[in-house]
Amino acid sequence: MTKLTRRNLLAAGTALPFAGLAAGAARAEAPMMGASFATHRRFMIGNFEVTTILGGTTPREAPQGIFGMNVSEEEFAAVSRDNFLSTEASQFFFTPTLVNTGSEVVLFDTGLNAAATVAALEGAGYTADQVDVVVLTHMHGDHIGGLMNDGAPTFANARYVTGQMEFDHWAGAENEGFEANVRPLAENMTFLGDGGDVVSGITGMAAFGHTPGHMVYRLDSAGAGLVIFADLANHPVWSLARPDWEVRFDADKEAAAASRRNVLGMINADRIPAIGYHMPFPAVGYVDTGSNGAEFRWVPEAGQLMG
Ligand SMILES: [Zn+2]
Image 1 (cartoon, rainbow, N blue to C red):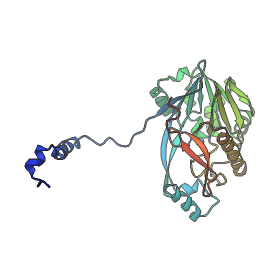
Image 2: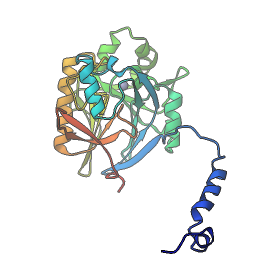
Image 3: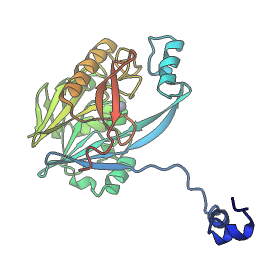
Image 4: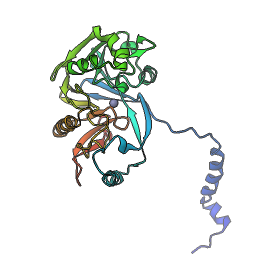
């Protein structure tokens, strides 16, 4: 074996790692940029162009104050550990969806506030004025928060669609968010029941429980399908693996669990993709059946929709 000396290392070109070190030291002077995230993701479902829009993301402490309220701390910790999740904190995402059918632009839910949602919408190449229809899956603050902007409608050219049950509930609830954001738009709003169409190829389905009239929406175009399941399930593990775990934000916990099983079972059986408003961004995935006590499993989209 040849004895390695500095001279023959240089001659062999193997000194490159040393050169790399020197260059690396210089590059390390670039400033740290901070954590960052893309704010939209676009793909086709048949002839519909679908864009998920990140309207916000925030950490929340003590997730068992929200999920798994009816199980022991030990059980919550075990399921979390099995899925590489912290029991100390969880990241929340808020993701409206824009669907361009080719003739109309339909926005599902509006985020926490107009500024963040419009910024993400513009980042994806749209303007608020291009939205023809705003669909409200339900009327919690993180879904209706972007409807109004300084007292004026954010989506100036839009009509509105929501579930009849949902509207009737909040209209009688003396709710501040509803009165500020929804009531002023009510005369331009139409109401759906189970099976009602928003436009051709977009159908509402009753999925009550999270709120009294919470609805999910199914897209069907040119043989392809997708379900926008909104707040049917609010976490990829704590809601999908354990649909019976009680969630603080579910108004009727038993009905919410039954809706979860029903809709997640349909998405799984039909083998179509889904978008969940609170799934980790870009919020697109598939629903598998689970194992080891898990009922369902969220499978993030892995490039299947890029074609
Ligand atoms: Zn929500």
